[in-house]
Length: 441
Image 1 (tube, one colour):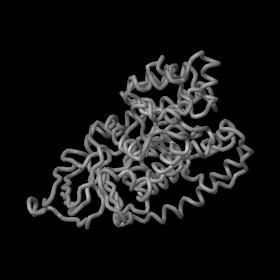
Image 2: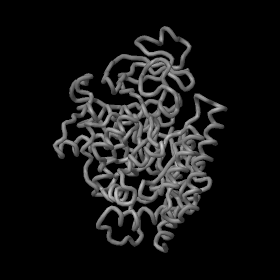
Image 3: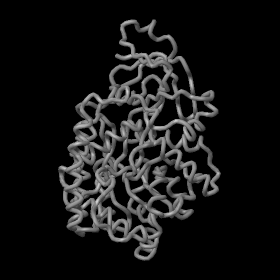
Image 4: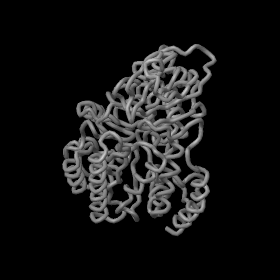
């Protein structure tokens, strides 16, 4: 049991800011919230918050932990005048260069940096074509090493090895989901890592692959996590080869539902938007990645029912992502305001609820104790009505003081309980070896 005393309790949707609140945690759950709980629970250990902001944990709804050792990459990269050449010359070479050692350190470093940025959970989308079998279990190990909650899956594709590679990807997704099922049987409320069924993008998955993915979703009870319409090419390919929009093609194989997570979706048609809403599927909006890849801007945000914020591999700083999402939207002449993007941040916790079957995203009795704690001396009054404005123009990952996942302080007073610096030191030579393998591809 642990009592967080004198918190400024913050919730996102609807926005709430309540000073002087105590939060009592037992195991992985919040068991009481209110003022003056110390007198009602005199035996509970107390951690004084001194007015710090305590909020539901931040969730990155789409990421690529396999890119963790790509920063400052020194490998010859041919010119990339468009998105497809960027994939072929950079990212598809990098993922082929991953081995067991480099993947583990990619996962650990990304997990560390996610927590430092205030994330309590990250939804990952993984690719390592030369290391498929066991890759997701290794990523799970990296999540657990740091204490981060998350989900992962393998990017099923035929882009390197045809049907054989595609089948291996599906098998890895099923194998990992079964491993997670075993975890849940042992500790249904405490397990940290869940599974999607992953696929790269419709233009690298033939109909035979979609059929296998549908079967995998059915047998595991999981949903599909896939890039769709990130670039015009994906849409043009689908129309030319299959005579339909990419989302309609996925729906033809029963791959759209409440657990489906569609990344990007910049070039969806109006019918695609309606279909996504009808199926109650989520879209992960990744504004910084979209800008970096020069793939365009998503004009559908105000029309989509379920939108969460992701990063697509550009770190896990959700404070920064919210700012970019809002500023880019304003630059594009969009109608949304900071409150709408704060709602998208909240939606990350709704994604967790759909997949972990636990309550997330509230500071209330019975909810999972995944919390982000910020030391933010607001220079202006902080009210529910202007909370989103503080997120857009003030709060940042520099404000993150502590992070709790499943009732455990995995990051406290800006420190981990283990030697994180050692992991960074170990990762640097591993990165250089990976870059050398890229140069040889």
